[in-house]
Image (cartoon, rainbow, N blue to C red):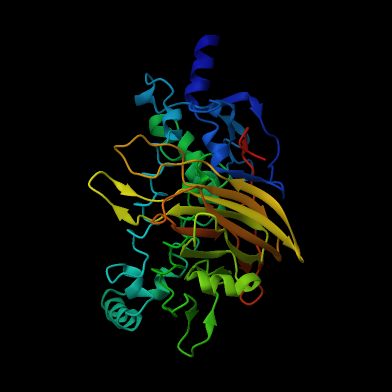
Length: 418
C-alpha cells in the first residue's frame, strides 16, 4: 500500500515532503545566462535534475507550494533522460531552434527591411496603405485595433500577460492528461526554458507581439526605428484598458526596431523594449547600447546571428557574445556575461552551444548597458540582432497607473540561478 501511494505521488508530479509555506520572490540581484542553462546538460555538468520547481503559492490554490517532480510525459516514460534532450544543441535552445538565425526573430522572419517582411508594410513604408486596409477589414468583420488592444486581446485580462495565466494555467498545461508539465512550468521567465516563454522575446511583450513592428498600435516607424504618431511626435508607450469593466488600465512600452545609430544616440533615453540589427565593424569591435529600466522588472537580453552567406553545403553566420552592465554615473559594474561557443553553420553539421542570452532582475529608474561582440569569425559573418525585452508595465486606474512588477515570483531552485 505504501509503495502504491509513493508511486501515485510521483506520477502526479509532487512530493508532500517538500512544500513551501509562503510565496518567494526573485531577489534583486538574480541573473542567469545561456551558459548556465547549457551547464545543466549532459554535455557539461549533467545537473538538470538538481533544479527544483514549485507550484505557485499565491495563484495555485490546490497545488500551492508543492514540489513538481521531473517526470516525463507518460507516453515517453521509457526514454532515458527524456528531459535532457531538451538541453542539447539540437534542441529548441540551439541555433536551429526559434532563437536561431532561421527562427521567427531572425531576418527570415516577419521583421526586417526587405519588401517581403510584413513589418515593412505594417509599420514601415507601407503603413498608410496597411492602416486603410485594416480599417476597411475591421469595419467589415467588427474586429480591429480597439479589440486587439482591448481587454480581450493579448494585452488584456484574457491574454497571457497575467499572473493567473503564467503561474497557474501554464504550469498545469497537459498535466491532467499526460501526468507531466515540467517543460511548461519552466517557460516561466525564471525557469530553465524561460527565454522561450510568454515573458521573453517570443511572447506578447516582445517584437512579434502587438507592441512591436508587426503590432496593432497603428504607428509608423521613421528611418531610425522610432514610432511617430500622425503629428510626427515620437511615441514610446501605449495605454490600454485591461479589464472588461474598463476600470483598470495598463501602460506598456512599445517595442522598437532601431538602427544602431538611433539606439546608440538615444542612450539613457531608451527604454527596456527594443531590438537592433547591426554589423560589427571588425572581429575586435564591441557594440554598446544603453537603456533605462523605468520600472522594477525581469529583463531578457538575447543576441542572435544573421545569415549572410549561403553555400552549397550550409548557411554561415557568426557567433556573438553578450554582457549586461549597470551604469552608475561614469562607472559601470558587470552583472553578467554569456559567451557560450556556438555553431557557425546549420544542420546537418554537428551543432554546439546556444545563441547567447542573459535574464536578470532590473531596478526601477536605473541605467544599464548591453555589450555585443563576436568570437573570431570571417569578415562576412559580423551581422547580428540583439533583443532587450522587459516584463514590466504600469497598472491601475486610468491616469493613475503605478509600477506593477507582477512577474517577480520565484518558483525555482537550481545551480543555474545566481
